[in-house]
Length: 184
Length: 289
Image 1 (cartoon, rainbow over the protein chains, first blue to last red):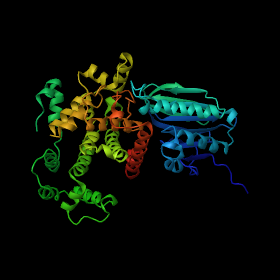
Image 2 (cartoon, rainbow over the protein chains, first blue to last red):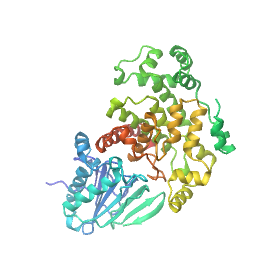
Image 3 (spheres, rainbow over the protein chains, first blue to last red):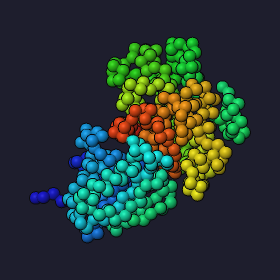
Image 4 (cartoon, rainbow over the protein chains, first blue to last red):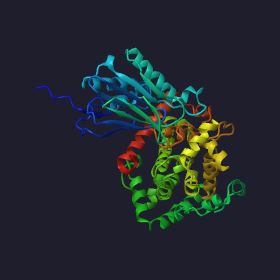
C-alpha cells in the first residue's frame, strides 16, 4: 500500500524530515524549505537580506511551499550542495518543486512570488560582492528555463524583509521592520 | 583608562559619561590587552589572576582541548593559554563580558541576542577569510575588531531612546544610509562611539581604527585589519545576522574585496563557512534561534 502524502514537508536536504504537526506557523531558516497542504499553516521566513524566498502556491490543490536560499549557484561548494541543496538557487528551486509535486502541485497552475535579493547601498557596480542581484537573476533564469512564470516580486532595494505565505489562499505578506511593505 | 580628547569633543557629554561608566573589562582582559600592546605581562601572572574565576578557566580549558589543538587536554592553565594565544584567550573573556553587557537595541531593530550574534558571526567570518586566503596572514587582532565593530550601538541603545522607525523614515526620506541617518539625527554615529569604547578599553589602535571606519565609502588609507572587518560585517549580514531595521542600507568600500583578493566564489565560500559556524552557535544556544 502506498504511504499517504504528508500534509507538511520541511527540510533542507533531498530527503526532508516529515511529520511536523499541521495547523501552525512553520519557520523556514536560511537554506531550508517547507511545503504544506494544511489550510491552517502559515509558512514564514525571516532575515531576508540578499537571500531570496521563492514562494509557490497552487490554487487548485491549495498547497504552498517556500524556499529560503542563500547563494545562487551550487558550484561555489558542491559538497555543501549535496548536504544542504536548499542553500543554493540551482539545487534548492528544483527540490522545492519536486517536493511540491508529490503533494499535487502542478507547475502550470503555480503562483510564484520572489521576495528578497536586497543589495548593499552603493554596491550595484561591484559584481564580486553583489549577492542579491545574482540571486535574483539566477532564480528568474531557472524558473524561466523551466517554463514557470513569476507572478509577483518584492525584490531589490536595501531593506530587510520577512515573508509569510498562507497555505489557505496563497497570499504572501512581506514585512520590513514590522511594517507590511507588500502583499503579493 | 581614558578617552582621547579628540573623540571626547565629538560626542555629547552624556554619551561620554556612558562610555567612561561602561562596565570595565575584567582585570584579566585588561592585562591581556596590555600584552597585545607590547607590555611585559607574563602568561603565568595572567594565569594566577585567572585561576580564581572557575567558569572562565573551564571555558579556556575546553577551548584548548578541541581537535584544533591536538585534542588532548592541556596539563595546566598556562599550557592552555599558550595553545590558544593571547587574542583567543581575550576572545573567550570578551565573549562572556559582551553577553552581560548587550541588551536589545531598539534604534536598530535588534533583539537582546542579535547584536552579540552579529559580532560573533563577524568574528567567524574573519576566521573563514583566514582559511580561504591564508596568504593574507590576517592579523589576529582583526577577530577582535570584528567582534566589537558594532559595540557603539550598545551605548546608543542605552542612552538614546529612539525607535528604529525614526531612523528608517529619515534614511528613506533623505536617501541616505542608516549610519548617515544616525549622524544627521544625533550628530554622531555608532562607529564613533565604538572607536571611543575601544580606546577607553585600551585596545590596540588597529581595532579602534577598524571600528571607526568600517562604514566609510572610500578606504584609500585602509589597513588589512580594517578590510577584514569591513568584509566580516558584510558576510555576517549576508548570512542573516544583525540585519535589524538597517538591512543592507550601509556602504562598503568598493575596492575592499580587491585588496583581499576575493572573487564572488571565494566570497560565497566564506559566507557558507560563516553560516555553518553561526548554525553551530545556534545549535548550542536555543535563545539565539
